[in-house]
Amino acid sequence: MLPQPTQVKVMLTNMMGQTVQTLPVRTLQAGANEVTLDVSALPAGIYFYTVEAGNETITKKMIVR
Image (cartoon, rainbow, N blue to C red; front, side):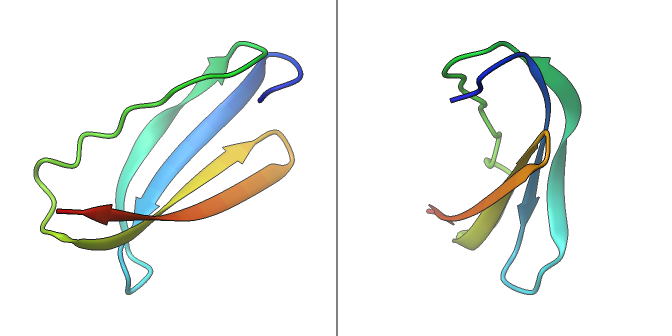
């Protein structure tokens, strides 16, 4: 949840730490937001998405099947 409009960057990395996808930096509105990643071209496996918003960075695991 963003407290105010914030520039956000989203990156997707593989298990080896290589960046496989980066979304352009965009300004998202205050409140809850949703970002969709197109992973249809990626092989099945475990990936990590990182969201940088202001001075916060959050990394979570995701599975592509």
